[in-house]
Image 1 (cartoon, protein in one colour):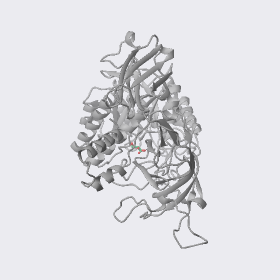
Image 2 (tube, rainbow, N blue to C red; image 1 turned 135 degrees about the vertical axis):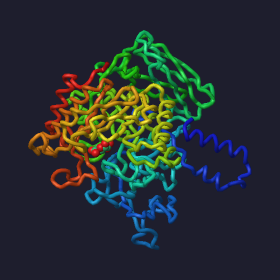
Image 3 (cartoon, helix red, strand yellow; image 1 turned 135 degrees about the horizontal axis):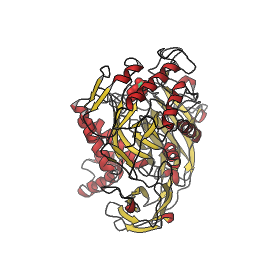
Image 4 (cartoon, rainbow, N blue to C red; image 1 turned 60 degrees about the vertical axis):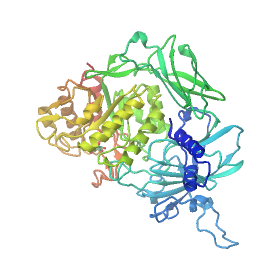
Length: 626
Ligand code: GCU
């Protein structure tokens, strides 16, 4: 049951038990004020009113007293009220004015738009007006594709929701707060880092702040389809002859039990009508008369429509099966070898957070140049355009939540936050055939507290979506020795093991990779999920001259020679497709604020290492699918 549903149910129950509002009135008041967030799946396939465009903005220096009071609680009386100052007539009332403030493009991080904000980490207030005409028996939500890192939303001065996390969407109901005519929305985005955030205070990418993905208004009927999961039935084994059974569920928000739901996949000869249970959820299985499975060579998508009462949605969904068999990864029953690259959400050429069709097209163009069939979307959920493009293009994806290195694994509220982010990632993308892995973390310290946290999270991911494979990118053991034995107990909870290592860059010379003998205490499919070296494009020298294209290329030659000797290697993702901004990379003339391990420069220029990888992929010369 979605959190918002649970909160509503609890609220109703509470009011039944305690009708006399005297008891715990403040608590009821708090509950009623609690912003009930929902998450509407498939918004990009619904009729929406885009709120993208120029938003007024005001920068608030720490400690951001317009947003937080002395105790750190969110204030509703500050800039949130969007008050106009009495400039001429007095009496003096306030000292801000969105209407005459400069503007930022939404979607877009503030860092790459306003040079005075390039390194700013803190609170930026956004404001715009929007036209609204309430429709009878309908509800309207403000849909935000992502805002980094904390967001607080007011409409006409009334707080309607808040969200934590910089990479997943959220929806805030505006129905009660909006009126006919011109309305004002104010969003405060706080990109300040905190130890118990996810990611935590230090990470190797740029902290782009702001409303970084699309914003729209979406109106739906009173009872609407907010969630669905429509996939190829995932039995205990894959049998091609049975690969025509679809299964899953549709959830209709606030629908009474017995509400009818009809699923249609016309090109697969599927029409199926089912009814919701007491929680608004309707499970189904349906036999297709014919079904072409999704794969990289044939990324077949089907137009799916779901209708219930006054609501109807469509989506474009591919049907495929992914599972492991011993150390093999099977796509539709066939062993696959995944050859790809790590991709950060850094916009090629222009820089900043990826959020346009052009950005996405450029990234997939580089993957195609590489002969890739796979990409690790590191280290956080990317713009939904990436999964949509991969669905159409036939590129398989690793999707990950940003539990990067030293997270506060000892805190239960951090675990709850991780579960929320995991659910938001899975809920948005569970109908995307291209996503084959959910990853719960990257390079976390091997200790019992972390292993329990991530084992529980991996099991939560598997419970939430039993049709995909669960993975994580491990680091260590130290690779200085020739014998490298990986016995991280987290592997127990994974279907596929990701292994990061930097032989030839952080450890030793490239040729040392030739002597390495890896052993893994778990016999599972292995992806070398990070390896590589830094090189500034155009910087040339010998095979051992660090920071040159030649040294980077030499690292790849010896890395691949090492990997060929490890039978359970079923995939590789070099670190990284393209140079990307990072506040931790500050060697002048070589890094200048960029992590330079790209196969491409940030201007999409190919380094020598690109050719080594492209050729190895073309010749399938790194590992075997079985
Ligand atoms: C780490 C980490 C990456 C980082 C990379 C590097 O393995 O996972 O996020 O950018 O190494 O040091 O370049």
